[in-house]
Length: 277
Image 1 (cartoon, rainbow, N blue to C red):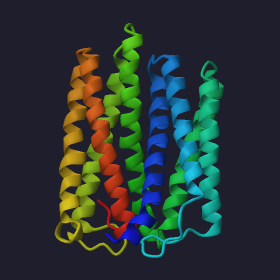
Image 2: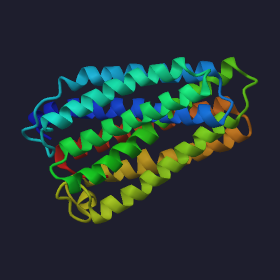
Image 3: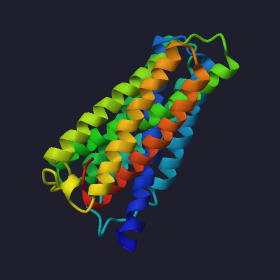
Image 4: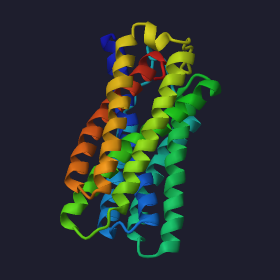
């Protein structure tokens, strides 16, 4: 990768990583708070964290360069504005959701609005940056699954730490999140197989990811940042079921590191070369 390509790609990869962390973490905490007995302190902390990360992504959005050597295109003005507006709305609504936790009806409305704003942010980015609508669909799916595994991993380690200060908290919240992370990783693994063998990126041919210049990165992506986290998530689930919360948290820490590396690598490969893995 040339210096010019790297310089142009890094801001987009940074944006993808930050938005994936923020949107995915909010989705996980909203679902966990609705169906389990997770504490309001954890829910508020994670919502505020998601809002802060989203605000950082919004600040970096204005500095995105016009792509000249990248596989993606410069987003049209209307989609550019929609992406930024939705991201700003998501950050505000995540805070509103945290404030309204005690009122279930209002919390549901705020949570649904924040979730919709997060989805619009990802969708507007995919449609705006992909050269064609046909390319935008798999790119949107990629952004969605990256948000699920990356943000879910962040929400998981925050929840794991909460057991240190709330020892009487039931194991249900962490078990649910471990299952959700595991399910998201399995879906990501299936998508990896489909995209690596059949294509799906911008002008990506079947098997191109595993046979071309990106072969080593694709193999490392599949083994280290998808297969390995699946094992870690399963181990975290089993340890949470036996209420070994410290062990589960440690496993989720390693999982977060692995999926973060995968999110950065997958984002960089698509932005620079148009290859989905």
